[in-house]
Image (cartoon, rainbow, N blue to C red):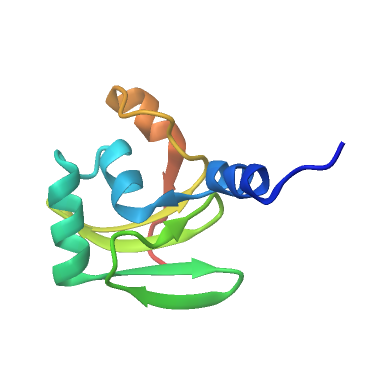
Length: 104
């Protein structure tokens, strides 16, 4: 049975998430709009496959394994994405989706 292009795109969508949605669901920002504004104003950096890119678009997709550098309301953050959160859950659940990287 062959799969159509739409089904393949849906599978890819499960492996990626918008940067602003990730930051909101992982509880770095209280509102998705705040995450969007922070990315547009201050930018972020994504490291993937040894390549570092400066990002200023909230719709940029992120995926597990990416290393993010950004400024949250609580200060600068450097994190590795472990998994993509399915929802904005409690802080204990959100913390399982990333690991903080110190002194890099």
